[in-house]
Length: 116
Length: 112
Image (cartoon, rainbow over all chains, first blue to last red; front, side, top):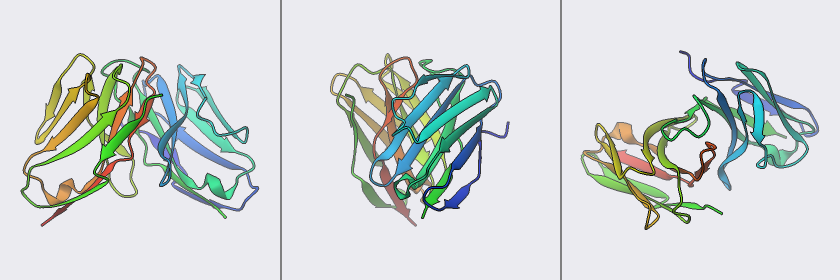
């Protein structure tokens, strides 16, 4: 398996623009997680899905952020409008199921977002 | 609210040395604890997962222990190598939801 795939790997945009990050989980995995990593706050969970359904979005910073999972093989994280403080590395991870005691999460390579 | 702390933030050791990385958490009611490795500019790679009913897990030169009552975990790396240089992250799941709370990580440098 190719692992978790994220695109783009790098994104540079200007403040106010819409940004869409994409993720393809490992085939057969039923849970998908979106994280954000910054130097100041470390790695934070934004939202996660189980069987394509959003379960917990309490980590989404504000209404400018939205995430969708239209099918088992694709998810998007959208920021509209983007702001400089959104600059971070965004990771997508998947696992066989959410919360199995022995189920680890497999991370993608991340998207480095820079908002000017 | 669960909080995860890793000490030290950075560590530099000569090649061949055995070393211990520390992780502490505030709420002992955890579901499992995981150790990840992150190389610069890369994603996270899972190293070891310890379920709440377990005391330790081993993989090659790595050994992770868990003491829930004291809220501590350690990652022991034997005979360190330059290729072990990376950031090591500890993460705790406090429920069966899969939500992970991460520590800030320990950045390890192993000098040849």
